[in-house]
Length: 585
Image (cartoon, rainbow, N blue to C red):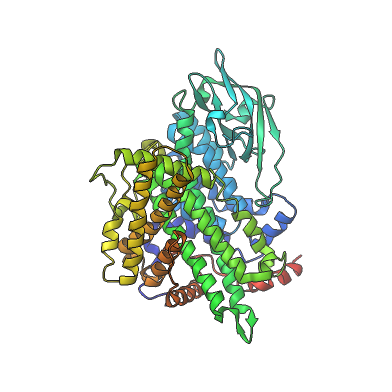
């Protein structure tokens, strides 16, 4: 079944870097690899950094993907970077989040930094240095305008004073991009900690957390920290604008962390259900277990379609990302958390044990993935962004504004010309044209030969039109109704991404992508979340479970895009890893 209509994996250029990383890191179920699930559990129990995992990631070149090709690194497309993040997160979320914090620090330099700043940051990042984004403050939260850190001008530069808290890599970073109030307004500053010395910087202790215990979530205090005039990133007074722009990149790529975690959760649950005997047969034979796995898989695929479209838009439609990145950040982590929770139901009591199935890795994974909806802005922050963007867009909406060809936007796997981030800067608005949702009518019309799918598509159209009407009537008011309209828009966008993927990419991707079952299950999951009663497609769910089995047996990602994983470790089944660990010195 896996091979039916499946293309050669080598044809998908954007998967090449992820497959290379997979080969270098080995199977996460193998306790002998540097980024094994078992080693991650041991480090987590000690609340220690997963040092071996970081070393393995560096040895595999993960840090090189944080630096654009134009600056001497390997970042050629954001679709490719999403796949790389997903591969790392399949093993250890603390590692991908730590590298993500460095990406957050480097992104404004790639976009707005001068030649000297880009050279220095590239040198640091390629030299395995950590970066941190000094944005968050304890009192300010997500309100950037409440930032209290101050950059006072001096004769030859600035003196920085303030406290940054709950920032990734705050204690171990070699450099930071710092948001500070200054003249004429807020500015963004590049602080090279090695250059400024230790007198003006005091590191804060790591904040204890329930999940991601191995991640350095801490902060630092700047006390009369002197930097030169060359520390200013971009135009003075544009700090808020730059932070808003750089978040379009990082909140999109958080989806890679969520997808990787969901892949591992499904793998753990599937393998357990195949091995666990209940009532004289494998648990997988039970209808409720199959339904949970199928629905979790469908949620992952909805999230994947949304994340891939957003990541690819960073390459080919950056002018839309003021809206699409917030939608992706709202949709993708939440769906992946739901998928992980479904896997927990399959595991039942064993989901709560710190030993047994996958050596207790599942309970760690649940705690780790729970934070992904919060990173780079909470769900409420994303809905407020979506609400504000849509209200602004409705005021300026005009017919015929579509500019991004859907075959390009949904051409997953096809290479794109590398674009240096500085050559296409992010926009503060999405331009009132939204090809994903605006062109939903044509996508639904293409389903008319399939009455069941067409009916689901028409429900999306109905919700889209009602949402637009609601937002027109509410204007800029931050009401509960406005946030609900934003939520519904996000779900319609996700459903539209599934439809466009089906229409424009299923033949090229082949295999699972060409199987109607995934689309039927995915659209039903979206429509259910919109509040419409819709019955399950049992046949589609059974086919999805069979697809899961085939993909796992064939060492393939749980993905519409064919991607070869590291060969599966077969020395011990996931449910018996703990026995292997006890016998390992």
